[in-house]
Length: 77
Image (cartoon, rainbow, N blue to C red):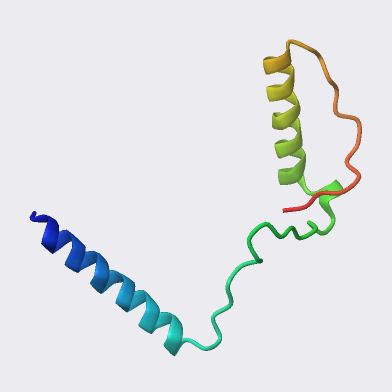
């Protein structure tokens, strides 16, 4: 494919996205860049627990130490 065709297709894609977003007034973007939101009931969420356990295991692996996860105070995403 010629570079001009790729550029034209990319411009067409951007235009389609812009029109779609403009027509959908109810569309909400995610949180502001860099913004954090608390995870509700994080201490009882099994997915959060898995993420924390994975993070601790990676820290232990990279630092050659044996840190232990005791409790979760709060979590943000």
